[in-house]
Length: 161
Image (tube, rainbow, N blue to C red; front, side, top):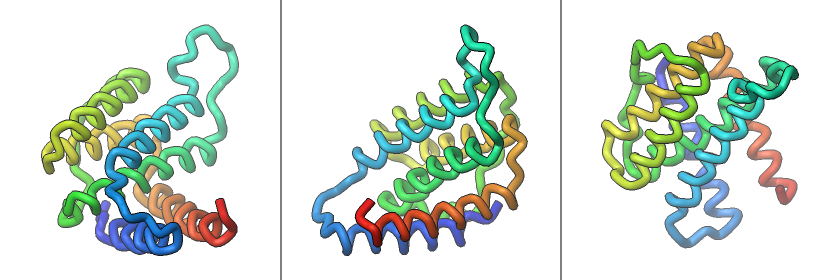
């Protein structure tokens, strides 16, 4: 999946937010925490770890929206640290349970937060790719969901979200 279009769209959204909210400090740590929160929200919608419950996962559309919420913050972190030259979603063949993939992804985000390098950033993308495969999300559905959520995020900003 070519990430350049998504980086461009995210960079424009980030600039709009900075301008309209008059943000004048580095929000890298806040965005890192936001990414972790979105990952948790995604896990919660899949319910993959809720061994005690008989209720199934949310609808695919809800899970996909949570997935792309994470992608917004992942792109934004890359923009903040000039990793936008990452053109393709890094490939990885890992296959684990969804619970294990969420734990690996959380760990990769924390490692990146403390050691901001391109390999650590790519590792997060690899983890999200494995989650996408596990959830059977294809490239086109991810891109369309991202575009839709991006538009919603602009609307939210205009209405005082």
